[in-house]
Length: 383
Ligand code: 1QQ
Image (cartoon, rainbow, N blue to C red; front, side, top):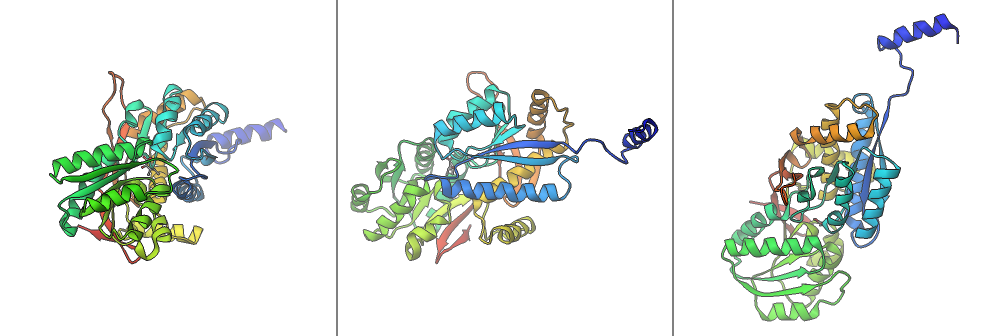
């Protein structure tokens, strides 16, 4: 190149008029259950991330940097989540990882991110203890401990619930944690339990448990399940003539219930900061954008992922990336806790969780849950 021309280009670049290099591309990993029993959640999560990333990149990215999502299917299995985390963190060298979908997988895979000092951000992990893994673990999914007492309280007020049966999956981190938190909330609210029954992942026949539950004559069934089992449980209950309300945790807050249980899907109570019926400006805009892109309505898993992406962009906006991965991961980690955001899921901030054995803990979500019940294939907001 002509040296004079070259010099003038350097001068222009210094003024910011032209730039030599393309703006940097920031790689962010997404580990989601895109196949298997948790695929219903994972695909919605991926959609939420892709929509947000597209919006942010269309507006010029963050500090001029484009964000590239590196998306991997962890199949809702903890071994796969570990493999995917290793690939994203050590091979792809992503700045941070979103996911995995299930708490069961997060408990196994998050220590890898923590060990590599790479921020990991769950958008659907609601079990106790996930953020106690360490200070690089973040989530915007509100814990079962925070949501379930509210769901039970509101349901009990409306549906005249004096005693309940409890049914939960006893082989999954999330469904067990949901059970612990349901049990505690029921004790606190002095609601007696008529019987407690269990099932395992992959079960398809729930007749024995439901027959016992029916005989115990509860006013409602408290259910800590993922939708793959929880949907069929609700269908089977209705077929056995059990028509009392179901009170579910995060796993039951899936529109899939309307496909599975059809006209028998009424009377399911769930809580979440997000509702399709919540008509804030941010949520209305999100729902319209999601429908325009995917030709389907979003669910709370998509909404949580969408907001999580914006929460991260807020932190990234405050960070001057150096291109040195270790320093950049730490800088993002340091910037995240102070982020406040108002998105599709309402107003959001972080609070530091309790640490284990003197280690600093990660960060949980501070958000207000909305309690809903299902009626005629829709969610109704209940107060
Ligand atoms: C968890 C959950 C599931 C319902 C995620 C999809 O809340 O595993 O923590």
